[in-house]
Length: 448
Image 1 (tube, rainbow, N blue to C red):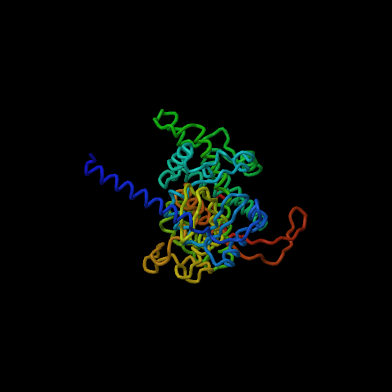
Image 2 (tube, rainbow, N blue to C red):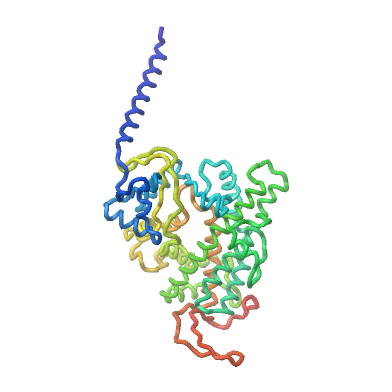
């Protein structure tokens, strides 16, 4: 005979099965998000523009009055997220489902970027080892060991800018700064001022050289019982650090220079604070950071004012899901339209009044004079990726950017180009325009 407990358990199991079937049937009957009608077999493949696709995605979302845009590219389901709410709800709050990566043979095999753990699938066991090594090397306490490299690279940048302030070469100087900083941190490689072979090799291949992150190698050499710290994993993490970090750092500092160029009152205020804190004849260092909150506010305002990239790296849905009355099949590629999402997040007038104005004071508490996110939200939440895919190198990047900006404003004025002037050097006459000039004679053998 059936025991009472068996009957109860059986009833519960049948009820759960019935509930699951009903839910599956309901979900399977839900529509896909709206989107443009595609052609047979290829779907929307030939409707995607080759340039500035993010703008077209946003136009389609407005046309179909939706935050979620569905596209089918030769049989693969794509959903574009066009609002901050959708990106947060799915990529943050449901990150266990939306943290995968689509397989990209062009990137991983033909380009040789399979070492980049940022594009590895979420369930990949090797990826977890890479992530562990990255967090070990790049958490806020660990990056203090790299401060000397950041300081040395920044001072080299200042000297390069002093020797060659041509506006057309500013990005070149910034690239050298980012490359020197990251290569010295990742591999301990000293970089030449001109035509450095390591920088050239890294730009061409994107792969790590024979060196590795020293702090991680210590765990290998002392025989720690941790199979994540293998030379291959450490080498790949170092390669990923350079491949993904250099351009973003350049972009942020360049945007900051643009903001200071357009708002000289912000530059003057920053210079005044630096002059009041840093002794004459010296450059800012990390020990001054807590006393230079306005520099920190400038960095956060730059992150809010100008997003680094228009499209975030696509995520992959691991199982069937539903959201806002629409169904998302397992294997759907999720594209956060960063150009629109970040604008919605970081240019929201209800959160950031006068959002298109470059105004670092929005993050300064009038009473304490310190950075305070009580009134207006910390913008960095939207700059480093979503959920479990958040950038592990964000703390290092912020430190390097802070030092570069603090040092730049302490030594230079940033002005709009003046009229062309004739300069005679070694008997050769030429015209010259300069947007970066010394604020005053700087007595230091570090940059002269």
